[in-house]
Length: 146
Image (cartoon, rainbow, N blue to C red):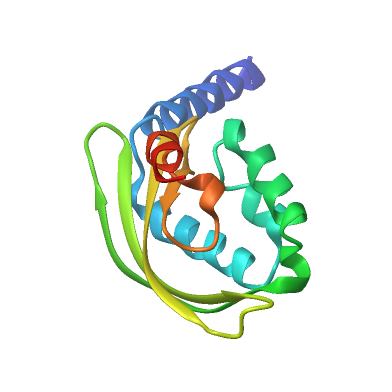
């Protein structure tokens, strides 16, 4: 009987945690952003892909291979500047990123806007404007911009 009570109590706690996590967790946003940037900076592109919405992950990885980013892309710095979370479970994150891709030796410092979505109890990178990953751009804007 005691085991049954414990099992019911544990399942109740787990359900409460699952319910609580269905709302956007702003505490997890910054660590998610930092982890994505760190992995991309150190060329752990498969690890960085773990933070991208599943439907865009394959395109991201394919582009890393196509542009030979493991050899040619260098992200030298990034700085989180701002993050705003909406009630609808999206977050707009603004970062400053410095990077270059060989054969160019000229570093570009750009303001990168990343949109994260809260889905399945975690934050996912949905799209990114500017920066070294053009395949993550908003589809409408990318198609219109060439």
